[in-house]
Length: 269
Length: 78
Length: 170
Image 1 (spheres, chains in turn brown, cyan, yellow):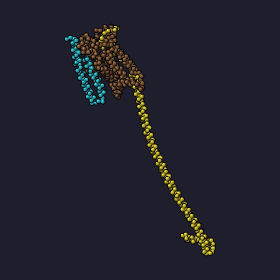
Image 2 (cartoon, each protein chain N blue to C red; image 1 turned 45 degrees about the vertical axis):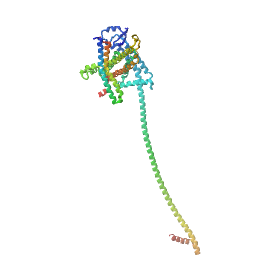
Image 3 (cartoon, chains in turn purple, green, red; image 1 turned 135 degrees about the vertical axis):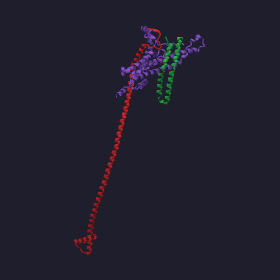
Image 4 (spheres, rainbow over the protein chains, first blue to last red; image 1 turned 60 degrees about the vertical axis):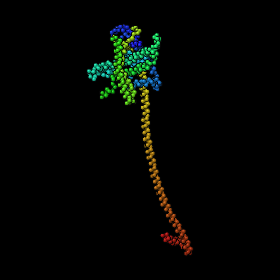
């Protein structure tokens, strides 16, 4: 079975930086010289596609909506309802960011099904970047609400001995989010290519009664319909659910750091 | 033992043991969801959504073990 | 910088350049979508909702006003009914009073006429009596004259007849 699972292919590399860090840092943390990879190209393609779709959806805004505007308004209302349900009415300003994050993650995972580009979220760097944005937002709102000392003191609650666990869980939040998203999408991609390779071998093995030199001409016909069903789960459903879970966890974490303003008034009274 | 053999063995054991717990946990979650749906069918939509979310979060450790197994097979130990 | 062929990154790895590109793309997409899609759509949804709320409020206000006017009109109507009843009653009473007055006056008039008639009858009776007295006296005179055969003076006759009639008349 011929299967190669590799990371994204590198297109442009800065040789000086590559040589500087070549042997020193472990393979996991990448070589700082790889400037443009397959993932970068996919990122630009996804962003361009989303900008075109957003422009098409926002044309012709009228009071009495026509067909496309009704659909767009329905989707936007679902988004606003979700944000209001999870974060409360006073946090409705986060809704555009959550919408952007959701379509970025979903289209980034879905663009791998066209075998031309590699999924953006199948690269740990991308999901880690998105998760770090969430973490920075949470820390920023915490510091804005409680002050820097108040934020640091929040780690010692409820008991001082819990501080290392609080610190670890604070670091583990973005790492877990990134790994969950990356593992689901990348693992799904690996499993899909495994299935393709297995079906190629199987379609050649059916004709094993032929002489050896004819078998090489057998096309992998079993690859035609079956992976499509599996791709429905691994690619479409998994991409949607993982993007949704990512956004929901972001909303919950940020809502935890932004309490409703009415509570402060009650506390002052 | 050959390095490749050890890698294959390690990957297999990792994935095998690592898939027990998420499956049991998700099965329990679905069981409770079905009971609640039978008790109160009108909120079945909310229950379904929350169940999918809970399963996605619970599956995290299973995904961790999948990633470790893939790492072992395809990238390997130096 | 060089273009490389067939160099793959590690499957699980963190590349800082890719993270940078991911952040830039997210920021660009966020700003673009917020300006082009989210803001105008939210404004449109809010303004339409406000219009609908205003329409509903106006409709409910108009309904309240209509109900209040209806109540006041009904009050006025019931008052009108009472007033008309009052007017009718007063008119009836006045008519009754007038009726009684007219009847009384008529009765008075009738009794007066009755009295006057009685007086006239008395007068006529006296007149007739005096006429009869005169005629009877003349007749008696003539008869007596015829009987007696002599003409007596009229004055003696008159005295004689008067005393005769008075004795009859009593």
